[in-house]
Length: 381
Image 1: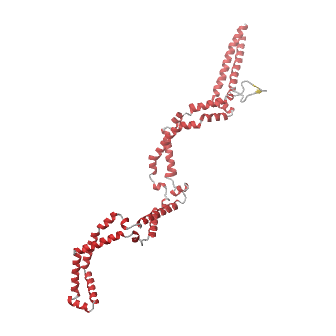
Image 2: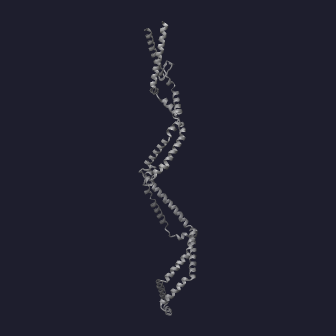
Image 3: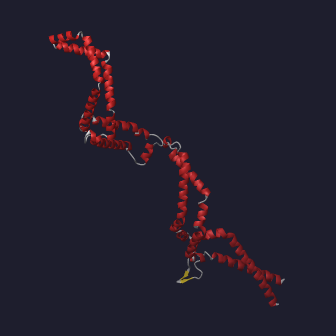
């Protein structure tokens, strides 16, 4: 009976000592939070292990995060996947359609948002100024030389080549007029006026040639002979060519002296502004001008932008992580934590394991107590 009580007593004492020792060891990882002093003498094992090695722990946690948790390969494998790229592309396309391509905002609204106020007036003034400049240059060019110098040679040659056609047309029309009733009336009137103007001499001529009708027919035949004569064609050709040559030598400014340049300038500017109708054109949405914008951007723009962004992000990932200095960020954050927070964090994660360690200490202590009890019993007896 004494053996059993001795063994039980020693086992209980060993279990209590073993469990208490492990529990104390666990607590001493964090407690006390600060060093304790008796006078100037610091008590041993104060502060606890983790508060004492807090800086080393923070540095090690930072290295662990950067070397094993948030490495470029880990982020690349998690973030830059085909599925993620597809989601980003869909997101960009949806926002582009919602806020730009299918928006109710007119081009006026977009310009207002961009701070481009009074654009219509500025553009119209610029167009007017440009038209004035160009027309003034054209006016100076047109009036600064002779017709021969300004008009393109090709045009002059074409005009000169049409002279025979003009002569033939004139002679043809003259023949038709002379041979017509209207021509007869005209000749009769001219003859009568001529004979009347000569008085008695005119009357004698009229008696000599017969009545005016026969005289008209004679004059008419002679006029037709004159029109058909080769010399008439040559005469007209010589006259027209001579006049055309003189015309070529005349200053262009003289030819255009009476031209209304101001009216031309005003008409051209008014026509340009009317056709431009910039204010009306800007009062429409992007979708009205570009109804196929959503389809085109989804096929040609958004995929390329997303692909480019992902490629650039992957190239810059490692450099960006180095610039972020995650190890220093983790160290700073750990340093800023109260020790009690670290204790709650560690114990909260490993609470069950710590209880098992305490229980294991009690079991080992109890087993040692049983062995000691047996040894003590047999050595005393």
